Length: 579
Ligand code: FES
Ligand code: MG
Image 1 (cartoon, rainbow, N blue to C red):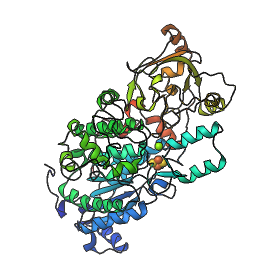
Image 2: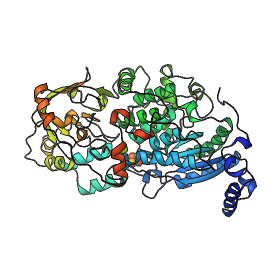
Image 3: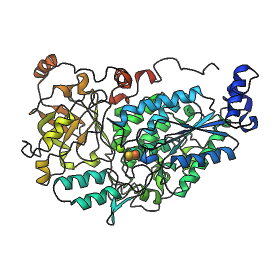
Image 4: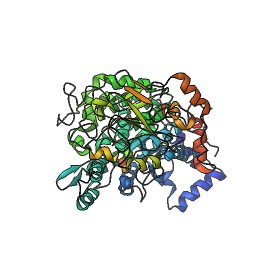
């Protein structure tokens, strides 16, 4: 089953750097001695890279400096040699214009750092939204044995005895503040209580969705994604990662054996059952394509239609947060509930199958992790729409929006930029009704730039004051995984490249028909043709640097927004470096 063949000290990748009796290897060995190591410390031992996305501007990874020590302890105990390598820390809060502009930078860095260094295996330390796909995409392509160490969720938020959920409650209390219902002191209290410890957002936002996906794909130790960041179990899990990766090197258990059509499908099903962030769509497609698995939007829609949402965790679920999810049994327990739908023979980093990893998993609170007979929603984590507004697709989270919008027709109110939208939305004289459809364009992968999380457009102040909290919104942007509402996202192709969204005008009637997965503007084709002929491409966003390179090579949302030249199909593999 697991190991195609066992490695020997002589066949280790690092031995190419350190083994030969030649001038270059002399140089490598002497530099290790410069670091204070004797030959017996590292020669013939698996060299394990610990790719650590710690930074002082990544609050979600604040524990990673310490946690890397636990990984090292494990590596040393198992007879490996650990080396910690700092990696780009793409944090969600501070990185502007959006962290998504840098996911591929982390993926490139990860791939090249592994390829260019004497590493036999890697432990990837990530968790904050883009770090999971960035690290995993790069490591899949690099191809050495790898294990993913998820940062784990932060503790439940708390203010005045009330539970607070990352993101979701920020939006909720902000709306109340705009409506004039909350005092300054209360707002300050929420600010201090909503993020109480190291760890990722503790709603089922993008971070927890993506770490669950890595777990379900077999890339973490079983259930590792659910362990809270500051639980002592997280330290033990980190040491276990260190011990296990050394064995994975000897077993030559490479990612191509783990990330397969079966494990990608498992991950997609689990994502749906958790009520996944819409961002999961983009990242999962990109990760799958790195492994040569062609996962499409339609595959995801098909799974969304038949997979019940059983994790009762905000924002799709009701009261609970990730800490509750862990106490209820965590991801292993959730996967055990739906095991009949999963490919249980998929291989994992443990060297065992997913089915073996799930043995003994139990649900301890069936209101948090529901049985299939009592799901939070029978279906509807995610739906993919098509129509004359989005020929290459758009996504919506039916479970997170008011059901009255599932079939809706109304006039468009179109904004060309975020600042334009923001100024209008707070204008209490804005001519808008609850039937209007708010539209934001030029917010996609190229137009944003970088595909920002602007898709949960704020409800106009005039409507907020009338008590409205939801309305139909459409954009070519993404939205935060902790957001909610009737938001159609990822419209492809995006308006910036001349997608049909670019042709829409304020007052055009838009029709959403969710049961039939349609999104259309009711404008006749002759009129659209006139508008198309008059459309002019906007000026380029960047004329140099990373942004320029990003603009040249990023793919559209339905393809995962990887760079075209990083995709597996682009050319021959880079291969091993000359030494
Ligand atoms: Fe890091 Fe949400 S900000 S996971
Ligand atoms: Mg987020």
